[in-house]
Image 1 (cartoon, rainbow, N blue to C red):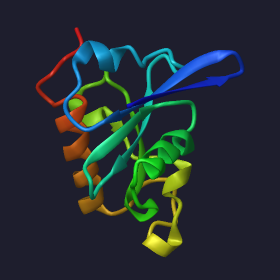
Image 2 (cartoon, rainbow, N blue to C red):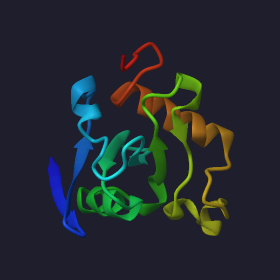
Image 3 (cartoon, rainbow, N blue to C red):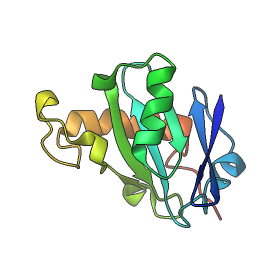
Length: 132
């Protein structure tokens, strides 16, 4: 499922990812709207990703509409051209949730970060893949 949004005249797409997407499809999100980074939100229970958009909240709303629970959603940023250990940034405004034990924009729990990393690598870009 894909949702198209328009911000300030720039078309943006959010894709619901349930299985591995081709590298070329992933790369099509660069420049829409960010040149080096792709925002995404992970449902850590259903192991699904909403990829793209200008705000993590946009991807979050797509997942919520698809039946995800807000407590299972975590935002991150993917820098696909960086080395595997630097590709994922666990930072988003939607991550600020003292009720879930995360008072910061950054996901603080190392086990949760590992779950997000594992889902990201399985659905988007595994560590053995390069974009060259």
